[in-house]
Image 1 (cartoon, rainbow, N blue to C red):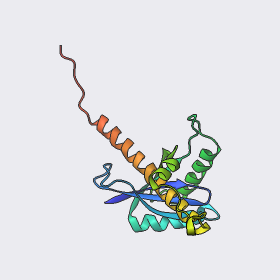
Image 2 (image 1 turned 60 degrees about the vertical axis):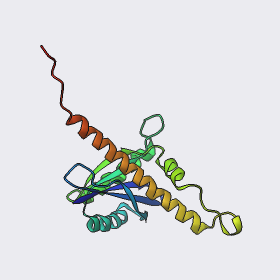
Image 3 (image 1 turned 180 degrees about the vertical axis):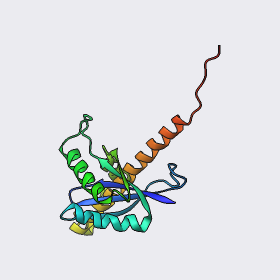
Image 4 (image 1 turned 60 degrees about the horizontal axis):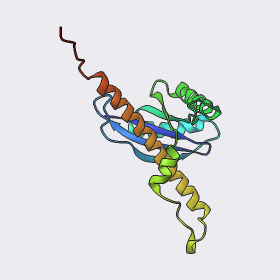
Amino acid sequence: MSAILGIDLGERRIGVAIAEVSGGEVPGTGARPLSTIRRGRDVGADVAALRALIDTHGIAELVVGLPIDTSGAEGQQAARTRGWADALGAILAERVSISFQDERLTSHVAETRLGPMPRGRSGGPPSRQQRDAYRARVDREAAAIILQDFLDSRRALSTTSNRPTMEPRP
């Protein structure tokens, strides 16, 4: 059994989710949040952190969330994400394949799922630690949404390609 990692790439953190895959293309389990990694100074530092997860969980594929603009165009952030994934792929090419998944609104959906940020002591504003912990949870949840969307689209494609075709009767 192998697994797929979902990646929500941010400027400060990388949200990571996982789904086990059995029998090739069919997901064995749904996507679930795994961890949040603090971004390194360069891609090499990010690769080192991801490589530990790849080795530990037997990862065969990475799905990176691609920040597409609401218009459907790829902007500067999408270009930066593709550049990061290309650099990652150059280092890990023999170990994993890399795919992309549209990540529009995933952070918003993740925040909706998690609910509001907890209040601080005595109902005041949250502390910096509370804010950081909440943002890390949102990043992990967004990665799980990205990965689940990818798995759902893959399942839909395999279902339609395996569907028998109707032959017209003479």
